[in-house]
Image (cartoon, rainbow, N blue to C red; front, side, top):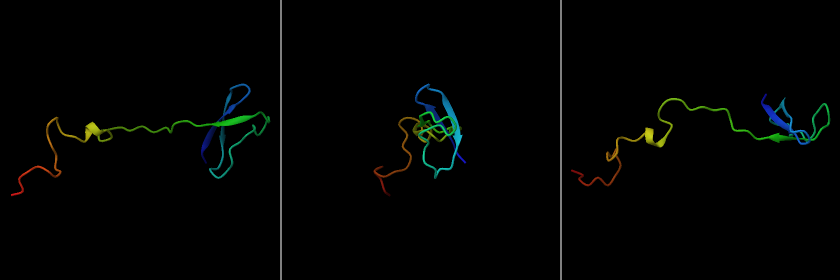
Length: 74
């Protein structure tokens, strides 16, 4: 079950709640009734190793790899 972060609109305090993806977002804290809003945060994902960037998949400057338009066809 995913964990969602909510912010108290009055105090700015942050809360974490586990709820189903099918559930509606809370508008009030389930225990205190204080107004809350779901905070959208970036996913926790890290790319490691080579091959994730455009410059990782290209050869040295001036070198062409494959493709059409090279001129001679035999």
